[in-house]
Image (cartoon, rainbow, N blue to C red; front, side, top):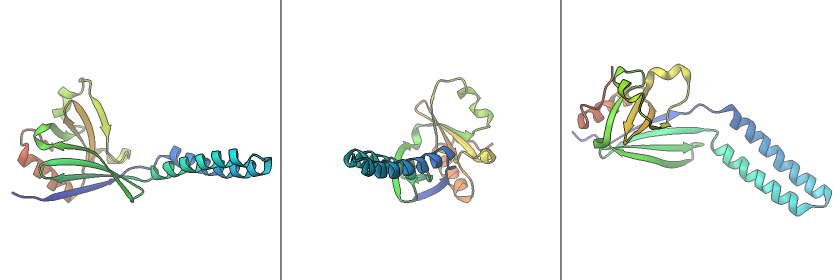
Length: 170
C-alpha cells in the first residue's frame, strides 16, 4: 500500500498579546526616529527605530501561524508556516518510533499521564476543538496534534498500517 504524501494544515489561534506587541513596536519605531531627529540625536534615534522595526517584523511573522502535518515515506513531519509565506521544518518522526497515538481524552493515555515528558503543542489552541486533539508519544516526548476531516482519517489509517498496536481512535 503506497500512499505517497498526506498533508493536514491546522490554523493556530492568534495571540492577542502578539497583536498588541506588534502595534507597540511599530509606534516605538516611529517615535524613536521622530524624537531622534528633533532632539539632534539622529543616529541614536535611527538605531533604536530600526531595532524596533526589526522587532515589529518578527512579531508580525508570528501573528499568523499554521502547523502542517505531513506523512512522507513512513515519517510524520511537522512544519510551522509563518504568515502563510515562510515554512520552517520543526521535527520529523519515523513511524516505527511511535509509542502511542490516541485522542487526548483517551483512556489509553492513562499510563503516560504521570510520566515526566517534554510536551510540544502543535494544535490550534481553540478550546472548542478539543475533540479533535490527539496525543502522540515518541521518544519520551508528548506532542499534541489536531486531526480533523477526511485527510485526518486517511493519516490515522496510514499510520495504523505501519504501527497497528500504537494507534487508537476510541
